[in-house]
Length: 272
Figure 1: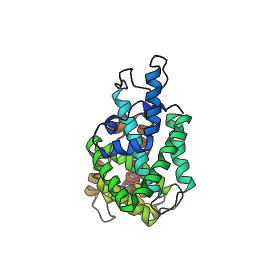
Figure 2: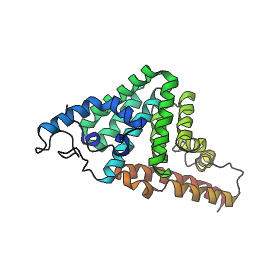
Figure 3: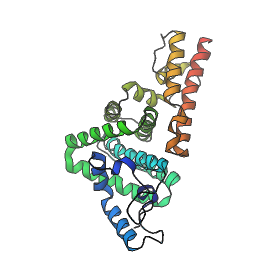
Figure 4: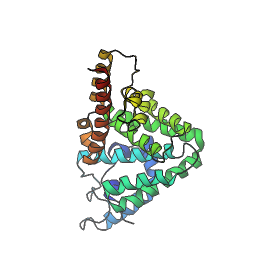
């Protein structure tokens, strides 16, 4: 099976030596990388094999592709932890990941991405809950070093969507999401805010959802509301994740729009 471009193109800092995510990548895709490199060594002039590598093994991918591919692999690693949080692998959660891969990386990536997820589930079983939790913690520490706050927020948002996709977010999933947020240098409030996106309606009866999105209480002053919104707008602005590709930017735009809608609902209720 030829390696997909999103894997073979580059995993950037993840494949650098001496890091936990590099070890996880080796466990998950080592056989695919070996096969691709063998193909590249056999014929490095036909375009087959390890896309993005030249005949000397140096990476020729553009910087944004490295960041994008590393973001995707990080999402798969953390997704495996969220999906298994309640002890079940839900079809709807796996299907969301398949659709994400299919829409943004092509059909071939679906099979390979699912293969990586299943290898991650196997790793979780082999390591046991405590050791795998430490693997996730160390992975998040590395992610924190290489991604800006907005990129980490978008990564967390994908994980929240995966937890919500079956219509129910279990207490175990909430706990895991808050763990990951903490490891990524984010807050529990970031998780609560994202869990409440798309939860309310345009009705004033549901305005509490809007306050939760902005991370404030209904007793906040008008000035506190404005400050909370400006802080959210700065951290979640789509331009701050544009280096990860247009599809990631569009997802950030959707989230940004929902934040704006929450703000407008509060402003309208208060007559600001």
